[in-house]
Length: 103
Image (tube, rainbow, N blue to C red; front, side, top):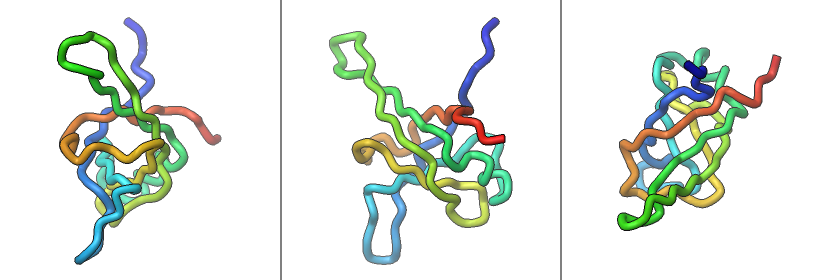
């Protein structure tokens, strides 16, 4: 059985303050990451969101992004994508790639 090259994550929402929201920065919860120090391992890693192009076709699309910072103390990370994610996708599973690897 082939090894999986990614870790599952969840698109939690957008970076925000009390009155404004920054849609260009998404918050991603990585499976198994509970602390800020664990989340630092994923800085610079690639993130992919796989979606179906239309309900009638079997074609899939991908939006690629990159993890740029940690967010808070609970292991959540910030990611920037090529194009902003759709707000309807909150709660959807994303793929956090285990490469590029920095030794």
